[in-house]
View 1 (spheres, one colour):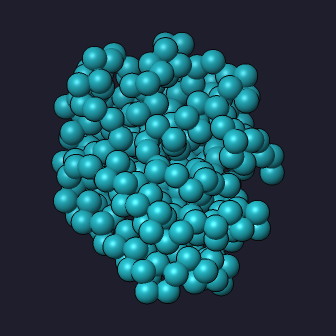
View 2 (view 1 turned 90 degrees about the horizontal axis):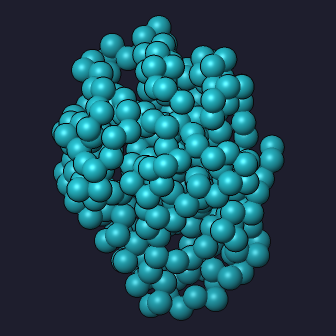
View 3 (view 1 turned 60 degrees about the vertical axis):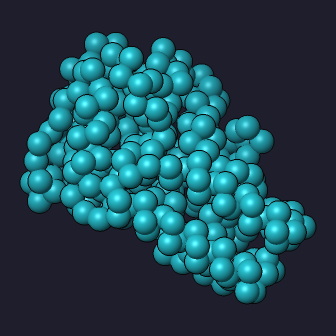
Length: 284
């Protein structure tokens, strides 16, 4: 599988199919590796990668700090995530692309569009995260990690990350840099050099910048409302993907196409074709 150094961080990626480029910001919350498009929840059920590559060049990647991609201990913002996608397009010599995000991947999709509207052909927002439940669960994860650092220290974080294959979402104790610790010995050495107090400040500020509202984070509503980018919105309906989150993106999108169906109606026979039809309808 190819990799590229983007903004100083290794990014694992792959491309599938042919046709107009489709940059895919993976689902999975804080564990957004590219394999989640095939093995996670609704995405495993609807099998997008069985259909989309016949029409588009699908560009998949492990978000920084997940999967096999690297990372950097710094205050994480949505700008860091969108810039990884932008740099990947640059690496592939692609000027403009369709964007699709799943789950928490919807946030950098909207952030990308508000930062680089001239490079955004369209957006597909599949099960946007948001709602009070999403915010509370994110705060719980960061609190668990901070408490683990306080009680056990950073070496225990390194040892834990190396002892599991889970990410931050499944085992919050290891924190958002767990996969990078596990997959990169040099990163783990640098991680160990931080003081616990300094590290906890980075963790606290990351939570505040990433999860700053009960609705969909990642962008300012006023910025999205100024754009005229075709946007397909497909709602989830659970504690992390509130219907209100999908409706919020619809409210902020001048060219919103809201597919008003329940999760149960989103199947392999309906969802891929709905997305393909939408993307084909967008004039290049």
